[in-house]
Length: 147
Image (cartoon, rainbow, N blue to C red; front, side, top):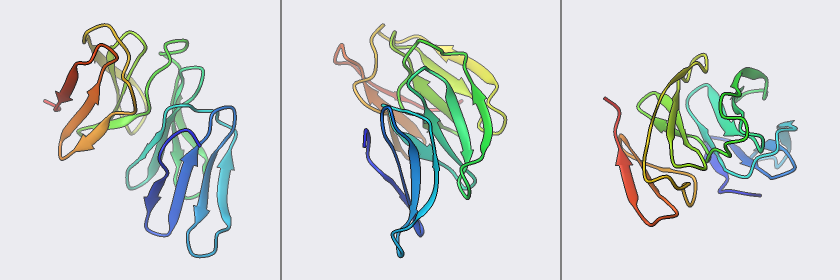
C-alpha cells in the first residue's frame, strides 16, 4: 500500500505502486473490484468516482461500483503528480515542479494550473472544508480554495 486507504460506507479502497487499485467489501472482506493501475500517490473519491494518479503521470477517474474507466488524462505524463484531491468540485494534483494542476471531475479535461515554489508536494494534499492543503519539499505550506 502506498497511501492511506479510502474508507466509505461498506467499501475500502487502496492503491499500491507497481500494483493495483483495489476495493473490498468491509463486512465480507471480499474483493469488490481491482484494476492494474500502479500508483505511488494516493486516491480520492466523490459520490460516483474514485480518482488516482498512476506512476506514469496519468490521472484516472474510475467508477466506484465496478472500477470501470470513466476518463483518463495523460497531460502530466512524466511529471509525477501527487495523489489527487478536490479543489471545489474539480480534481487537482501537484506535479514534481510544484505546479497545481486542475481537471474537471466529470470528463477529465484540463482546466489550468498555478505555480508554487517549484518543488513537489511531500505527500498527497489534504482536504479541509473547501481548502486543499499541502506542504512542499521546500517547506512551504499551501492552502488553496476554489474561486
